[in-house]
Image (tube, rainbow over all chains, first blue to last red):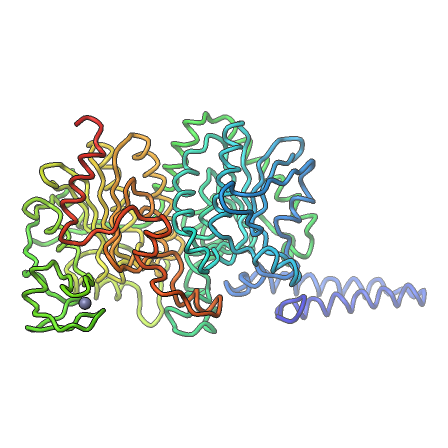
Length: 323
Length: 281
Ligand SMILES: [Zn+2]
């Protein structure tokens, strides 16, 4: 990656710049070269389709980590009105890696909870790169239970490179906090919509990931371990991450095939960062559609279906055993 | 039709891959030279420093259950290869090797047995099978053990020993955490007890799901417990880790296990707890 663009984006960005330069030049010189420009635009379209139709798993991981990719805070400002952020777990502190609060989407009330990685260095440090501590998982659950009490749906946006591995996190029970969420989220009486918007790494993502519908943006990833972590353990070399990314089957398309997610949400051509506004609108449409499907269900039905949904995950076989 | 089989195996009848052979052995913790027969009599606990050697799942069955008898369920479940996963080895080959080595089909034995006359739904993990890692089969067997506890209104006891979720089954392994934990929500609501026993090591995906959800959580002394691996933490924060970090004693100190129990006292303690955790007696 080179600053604000990925290596495989380079030829596209160069061609875009060339077309823009031609247009500027034509406008300045009052020349008529629109047919020539149209030819270049066709070339651009073809190039984009070529590049983005055959992205490797590793390229998708890179898109999911793109420095300009919209994050939770962007979706809040693009989609939600009257947002009120709520802080703290009422026990230890306020985890800045997770944003939570009430908001309105097309007038409908939501409890919105999402991981926030931050974009520039200062923000990244403030949000701890989206890596949560136990108090973050406890804050999330506190807000979800509040939503459940007041019968309001919950929208969860997942975007984390993993739960934070540190001394304080272990001292305060990272494992217990995640485990407790997995159990208690199963008991919530309201629709829970999960969307993986960027990175979904391991228990750090799943710790806020139990829901009635699980959606993924087209270029996001969700896995038992990050490609780097997997490469370090199984290949003993974290630079083998591209290989691990392929092996882990972590793309939205893979997860749909493995019946872990319900739906893939389309991204604008080139990825969410090429047009955050359009992405937000696509996301809104999907959320409202899913909410409509879930709203007819009673709390008991929601809980039963949610438990059954996860109950059905996994692949195993029965063998005949010789005595 | 549920397939089951009674097993009764002596501690000595098993191949001891994980346990030193020969007349004398060295304590892995304090270095004391110990007579193996002596070690066996002490449930594989060092007499000097109380270090608990890692033992097999079948040893726990002998240790915990009356007459060492388990009515085993789901023995014939085996994993597929949903990801067609290959690192230095193909995943199916890894499974085949582990099955041969352990004479087990995956990293957990489950069934029904009695602890001082009280029937329990039991699950015991085995580290010898790919590091006790949890894939679809372990998740499914834990799920069924929870369901047996609910259907038959029996307490649930799980002995964990695991490095976490099994990478070779990718996202499906991760989802076993949610699968088992959400079924525990149901078990919990029904007022059935769950005793979680943590042995060396219990970390990552297993620690961050059912192992942490016991009504009572018991740890064996000096076990490695935690979410993230110590090496990952050290690399992330770039400083030395405190002494005893992520040990059973550390977990007790920070309030995440109820008690540390030596192996010789394990059955007695579990039995007494089950007496307290029953509503009608
Ligand atoms: Zn010793």
